[in-house]
Image (tube, rainbow, N blue to C red):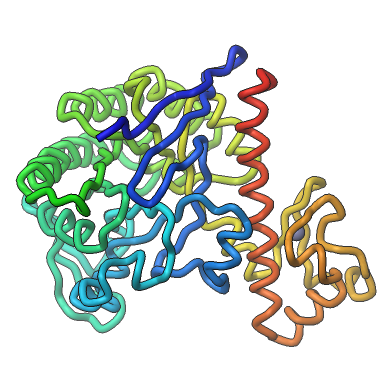
Length: 362
Ligand SMILES: [Zn+2]
């Protein structure tokens, strides 16, 4: 087996790097933006649209897919790639964030978390071992550890306890993966997730403990949870100087178009965020000149495309006036075109960033 990650160009102006992640479903150029496919679908998009938009990799959620449709069905389908008809790399988020968001419906112990399903109230338990089994069952190309994600702001001691628990669970995740019998089709790199809120010493502790366990890549969780931007930048910048240089760094749940450039410059290689899809289907569209709300009446007879400089299917074929009409009439094509355009915009941003690093502009 060859390397999992290779850096092919380092910026001379910042800590940005261009690299490649090698998976069984293809090679991914980094830095990469992953649209989210929480339920095994990028809402409103055909897989054909994703391929046409040069989407390289998707991020989905083990918690949601475990609850519905359930692992037996995904297993019978032959894994998540076949089930959703997506033949490129997929990363799964363990679902820690979702489980811990169920404030009144869960109970945490040393062993794991017991929670009630948000769908039907049934009771379930997630332990690190169980989450590793779920992610293995999905057949994803990159797995993430089961971690404890706390909200912001959090008292120091709460953050400290969550770091200790996250490290303990990360060890158990790694042990489980080591003992799962490896077959040709189950080569699934595992990422540890750094926690520690906005406390730099706890972030350092979390990163160092995970590095000791040794993962294939490192994710940074709990960023963009409402903390001021300067603080997020400081935490990430610090972590990029601690995390191994030769492993991919994944900033979870970030970001906006401007975030992609800023965090890439600090040394981040992977991003996922709901922004392009959630905004796209609710009518907030991104352009080179900023974002705008397509439902606004000033667009009622604006027959220009969403963005003159965009070459996506929506911009090549439809006007702002028509897309606004679709949104206002509650037609499904509106959210589909909005999402398609926004994904194109984010993917193009990332392509430009990679080009900028290669040309020593970033
Ligand atoms: Zn477009």
